[in-house]
Length: 161
Image (cartoon, rainbow, N blue to C red; front, top):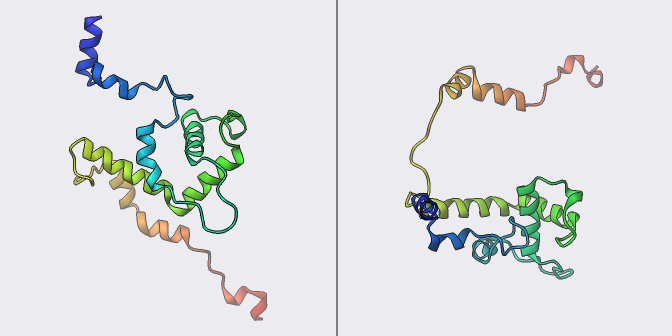
């Protein structure tokens, strides 16, 4: 037993710290703890003014989205005690469209870097040989031409005859 505790201490999972990572009291392992929810809640936009009031618990919506993302289950296989799959999908779509998911990701990314006593934005980049080879073949120019619509000749068009 002492060897296991010593190994956990070496790995940074001391007995005092182990309680922070215990998810056995949660309904699903993907559910947000109170501390995790405290970080995410301020980043979620409030309900829009006018119309009906929001009838769904946003924390449960976030728990449902985390369940789908962590388990990889199909939308129709979402447990019945979570919000309806259409509600979860609509919120995931809305938050992806209005940038809420990007704001949550950025805020958690910055906080994790600061907890690791690193600067909020990285100061170094790694370039491997594969990246350099693809850039030499025309990277940005070939992307631009692939994204543009094909041009048609006016001479071949029937409307200009």
